[in-house]
Length: 445
Image 1 (cartoon, rainbow, N blue to C red):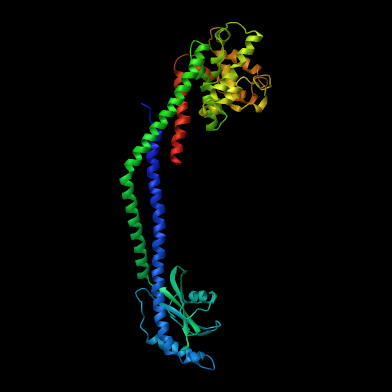
Image 2: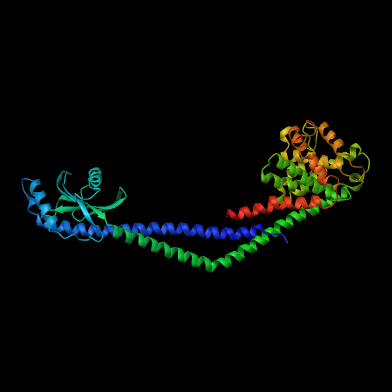
């Protein structure tokens, strides 16, 4: 029983996609959880700052309304007194390591700092480089920054006089505690765990249904591919039997062509086309009468003119199936010659499709080494001598050189043999070049 690589690929693809979705969605929700946690921290710090600055604002309202302007010394003393007498609100989340007061023009009036804090210099430098913006009476701003791998929340709160006008503002730097960071990390991990559990539970629930549907699709796809390949082989074999006692010719020329294509590293897609064209190269002979097709002697000019029409018949037949579009290079070009003396178009050199140039060598090689109703097979040496005589006129010289390196092995393995060895080898090649590509296609879905 044939293995179905597509069926296995479907299951691998499903598992891979589920894992990929899990990772992507988990990353998205982890990011959301992080920013939600960060927003909660900012809100908490903002509330603390608003409360503390509000209290301080009320305590120094007289200093904010001095007609002769701010007294920096008195402002500094008031700030230090307030700091020493105020409870450290929100200490579970961290503490303020810096508070600086600026007037409406951005000139610093006073500051206090936690001199024991390791990153104080870096925090001060960050505040120095911050863009100063004047806030409205009811505004406040917070921002979370990372300084030397430590998390800080910066808060900007306005200070107003008795008339409600903003006359100064406080910029504070709140160092987030390790405990608060642990809570944030735990929230992220908990969110990711929930997401992973939901995705995996959903995937486990629907996996059998999707796998069954895709498995059925894979079987139908492979069955359709096999039906196409088998139909092509049957049609090609039927044509070959009109011209010979066996259909082995079609299998041999296909194998020879693929071996030469592999020798020159032809792309996989072109080898697929070459297999199709090799099997159906003479499909147009269905339109040639037996008295001409099977004539044992040489055809006269009129008969040869009729015989040449099998190329046009072949192109007409393959034009009716979209799947055979890429076989037309061989069907329409396998009687062209490198010097332009062939038919039906008389094209020359590299204008002849490479698949047709490859097939021309394989076809003549097999025709010379095979028994036909009207001829006996030639020896390997005699065949190679005739091929060499066609160098540059009938055959592409470069392709002929490549073929010469594999011809002896091909002759030993398949030459003149009408058994199933060429058929079996072509079946292996068909699976390699068609079935594997469908499995790869599923991986890319």
